[in-house]
Length: 156
Image (cartoon, rainbow, N blue to C red; front, side, top):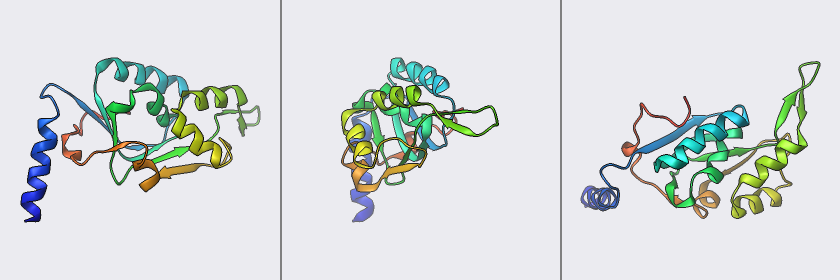
């Protein structure tokens, strides 16, 4: 019975996805330079592709939440978003918080995510994680990770 129910759910979900619609899966992205992600996600936004977050999406990777329309993002039970302040390397090689870039990053997030971040003290040097029920309350669930092309990740 569980197999039949699962199969039925898969068929119904697939019926709602156009055959030509591509899917991008984010599973293990630790982030990087903000500009790189802004460029990458501008292309993703205009492509019409759906984004499945199915694992870690940390740091600059989280820009996807503001760059791609909310209705084109879904999260699995493995989704884990990590947020922190933006930083630059100082003269001695140590990380120095960049207040202007941090504010820009924060402003890119949807209101519900900004509210969640603010309730935890804002973007600081400490990484904070949004996952589980809190994340699933903000984004629709996605069940068919197999739809995502493993050779077409959001981060290259």
